[in-house]
Image (tube, rainbow, N blue to C red):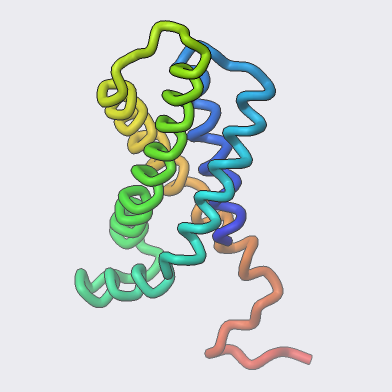
Length: 150
């Protein structure tokens, strides 16, 4: 599921970032997308989201799969992934703009704008696709409380 979410977040943040910058090109999209997927996969390897979600469920007495649980889990996931991915992508873009010698926008406003857009869109996308990706990842897995039928 982490790989699916990495690709989804990579597509979303790369596309939105390039479109909002006004400098969308296919080569820029491909290289930015690949970088963002690698960053998201690394975060997915380092950050144990299932354990974090279980801890959230215990802390807030959440029912797994409920709207409240999904909303809180999505918020935490968004707060972990989006700032890191956005920082890497905006920093890369800023240095490329600087290297080309064009009018270099101020870094902090550029970063804050992308963070705001990224947080909102990523929250919505994570909230909407997580149940689908979970079902996809669990396809063919027998739940522990149900014996396998033969």
